[in-house]
Length: 380
Image 1 (cartoon, one colour):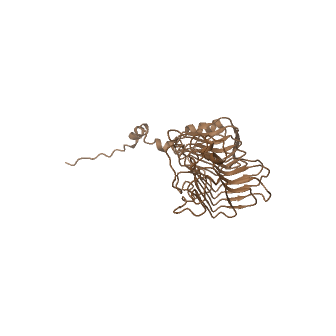
Image 2 (spheres, one colour):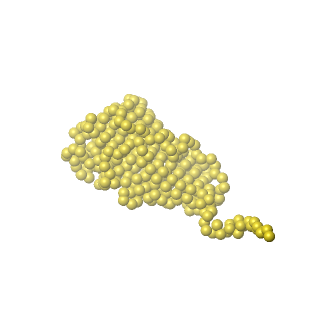
Image 3 (cartoon, rainbow, N blue to C red):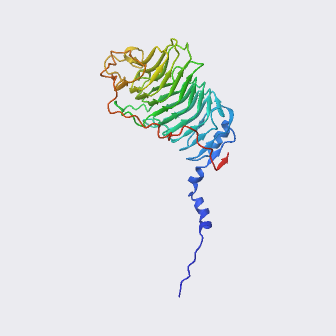
């Protein structure tokens, strides 16, 4: 006797069970959500509705914000309609993250104006860990007090942005008490700034970048147009030492292949002022006139008062294992020769064995334009 085989379509039966059990949740969470407007309330609502790996689109508009949006989603993308299209103005802090709650965050194609802090990545734990693998790109920062600040060991890239009359960034690192020099250079363990345009046209900003507390940054392939005159002393690229804080000074800085355009008239500009840490500077070029191109200093030894003084070598977190070479029309000044000595603490030769980290940064992925308009949009 032949046994009869029954073929049953179980999908209609299993679908409600699978949905309830969460099998389809990852796909739902990755949906694109279109904020109704660029208002803070609508953007906050869209972010609340988004899940890990999702995209929030912010439409064309000119909106004023008051207060901060805290982001705690992984691999979230916040995408505007483009510079000059999506404009957010605020005198407050705009976006913040805590620890690694927003790893993989991307913010693109938005213009920011007047904010005190556009982005703040706050570290947590000991040593402090902050947002990893972030990308901020295709944005404009105009008349901003601080565009980006981190207090913890963050990693990621800011690329293809325009900074107009804005203080670009303050980088505070992990402040690890146990970390020791020398560090390995040319790795992804840093905050990268690449292919940005920095215009100082109407106002005077003390720095574009400043660092402390175990910070590590890489500044490469950027163009600086420093046309504003009469500003007094400016340290466009800066790295603080132990002198300025009760903790650690800057850890590493890599500054290469940047272009600095300055006025032809006399101006009190220090293009680069390094007061602590380990670094390398090469392949940069400058035009116009500056008072000092590259300055090496140790405030605890040469220019007190500080959190503590230093009277014998080596000073804590002072300039060390530093290499400076091949910078066109850029000259070096060591203003603290008693503490910082050529051939011991710094060298005017190429760093042996050094290979720069992959360019463009892998997070950029070879693209210099905002992503395509999203599909499967849900309105929130």
